[in-house]
Length: 462
Ligand SMILES: Cc1cc2nc3c(=O)[nH]c(=O)nc-3n(C[C@H](O)[C@H](O)[C@H](O)COP(=O)(O)OP(=O)(O)OC[C@H]3O[C@@H](n4cnc5c(N)ncnc54)[C@H](O)[C@@H]3O)c2cc1C
Ligand SMILES: NC(=O)c1ccc[n+]([C@@H]2O[C@H](COP(=O)([O-])OP(=O)(O)OC[C@H]3O[C@@H](n4cnc5c(N)ncnc54)[C@H](O)[C@@H]3O)[C@@H](O)[C@H]2O)c1
Image 1 (cartoon, rainbow, N blue to C red):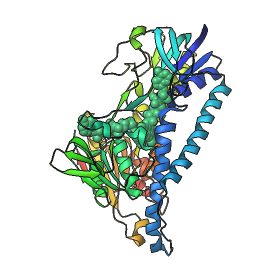
Image 2: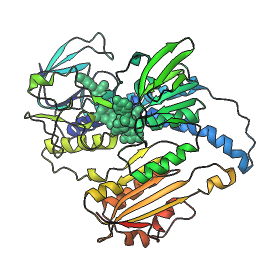
Image 3: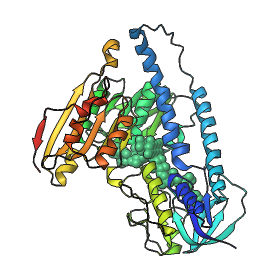
């Protein structure tokens, strides 16, 4: 039986980083993957999604180009071309992940890993290795990095709906799509399909999309969406889906019935624990997740750790999973873990234009007892002046009145994600409004607005 210092279950964002760093530092490391090397981000998440966002933006740019003197003949859109090109890129990335792990000296197991006991795992056949023979391995330390999967609503006809895992391999572009849910995935795919020319019906139960983001940002986002072609059905629940001759009917609680070619449920995710048998190792799940200490990724059982989406700690994002994996590998090898500021993790939602934030929303800052100076700015970006495209950029600074520390930076507008990544350094460093004010702007950009906001919009006491 093979024995390892560290065995990682799941080769996604967190698992790959943890295995690679530990192996590069001399530990005997192995990793098991049952579905796809690189995990959700590479195969069914961030990367293919962003390629689709890019694809969805060219149409608008072509529409706006004549205002700048271009004569562009619209020749339509080829969905199959995009899917094939995207698949080639993902295949290339899968190869890179495998060779990166092998080069680092990690032993690769293809198959489904499950616990036999707290130090023993069984690797059995899976989609990626249907004929694999069962293997038993032992390890001093085991890391659960199994990620999460899309959650389907249990309404009548739910089997007719697809989830985000399916959207990347549809044989045809749905000409009419209904999207349920107003979190990251709902917003992003509403933008993608609208940009690609599909008729989009977007259904969500809240009054505003993007729960968890700054409330004022959410209101401005709704205004941006109102200038798009997306049909919004807010504050209502989907009730059932029925198959009809020419597609599906989606019935809403408010009495509306939407005829559509495809229903996408973007209604959250649940941890991948079903076939892991963590109970055999002595771990009890909490709300379906593997409970861990955020500080050191320890579970309740000595030598077993969990990182990334399977823990539901703080943010379920790729860079946080990577940081958790990296920190854990360093700590297991007895090194002083690198310092990471998880609280100032920047977030972006890749709509067109994107929404991005770092630090506290106004509501969070009030909850943390800060008295606030709020600065906001809303304007038509220069690019839209000639084209006449509607929808304003919105920018906001949340500043602690007493210390003048900038607690949060929020934006909707072209390149918001790229801009907020830069401002995340300033918020992580704890810079003050004075530091922002003494920074010279870069002209002409939208980003310069963040260093030229001088007039207080309002003050608010906790
Ligand atoms: C549509 C979509 C878009 C997204 N876009 C972004 C984005 O733009 N930016 C961002 O930061 N985040 C984004 N995310 C979130 C991001 O993908 C996840 O937070 C991240 O992948 C989590 O990493 P992880 O290592 O925890 O898990 P994963 O990347 O999910 O990896 C877990 C791996 O474990 C494997 N596995 C599970 N169980 C077993 C088992 N028993 N044995 C062997 N292998 C197993 C799985 O097959 C999987 O490959 C997106 C997610 C989705 C779904
Ligand atoms: N750009 C990014 O960083 C990015 C992109 C995509 C996904 N992600 C990650 O993946 C996670 C999952 O994304 P998601 O959009 O599926 O989840 P989410 O938690 O962001 O949003 C889920 C949505 O489903 C709705 N919903 C849940 N249960 C419902 C019910 N019973 N009836 C009606 N509506 C219901 C919620 O109100 C919400 O609007 C995100 O939270 C995020 O961590 C990140």
